[in-house]
Length: 176
Image 1 (tube, one colour):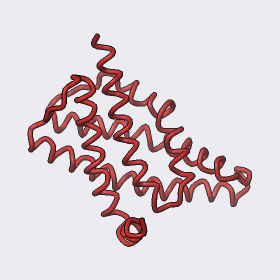
Image 2 (image 1 turned 180 degrees about the horizontal axis):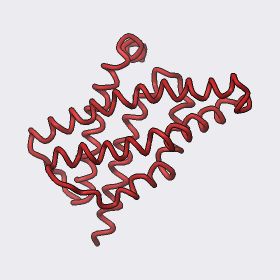
Image 3 (image 1 turned 90 degrees about the vertical axis):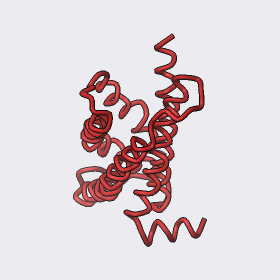
């Protein structure tokens, strides 16, 4: 894993872009597979390309948020606005502050870009996307922020695949 750590440290933005472009798009595809119970190509190749670009763009914002909100919590601690926290407490605090501030913007931006790619105006269930910040992303990112920094973006990209499975299963169940 040294090659991975070296790559992420040397190219933090590019490595985030690559990981999210691949894994985020894979999460979108897995969601469609779970919904239909069939492995197939759910999008035309040019749509997959645009989805990869979407995830690449989102990766940049996510990488900056990861760094920024960790600094935000560190600053709150250094100004005695939040008590000294252990590993779990700090990870939880970073996760909560990031997801309840930046996460809301990201859900809206993600849906806007999905709509742009699909050439539609679908804001249906956006509230459920925002609710996922509480039931999925805060716990997931609490685990993420407990890891060493070089592994955090990679795990966040993996979480997008996990959420694709969960949402695909949930949407399949709701159609039945």
